[in-house]
Image (cartoon, rainbow, N blue to C red; front, side, top):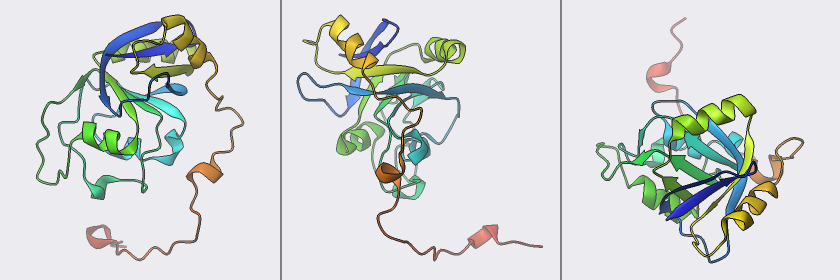
Length: 182
């Protein structure tokens, strides 16, 4: 079991996947959504989602697995991941592993079984809202809502030290098939 609590007092229940958090811990962040039909791994590793709990509106996520070629950066940046249904199996010739295993190794919790479209409508209507994901059933709902309300605000946050490169890098890949034809 897992729960997503929102700062407005709502507590949504679902099934945990990805990382199991330590007793008493919750992943906190601003709850935002992504409506893309593909590219969940790119979104997870996109530094612009740092400190946020990402909701995918596409109903089935994880069916293509994960692979190192689809990473936007060297690590997962989201604080948590919310999906309607996690695919039980991945089926793609490039897959190197499952989405659940990928999040577990990154220490990021996921929750499935929520009505992500209703949650997206709520966010779209009221704006991004602080939230918290917990996998520990002993945390009372009201305490989890309190943790959501204490999530660090994104407005004015300096994310550069958290997501930026520590040392310069050189781009040495070719453009391959995308070579400029002009």
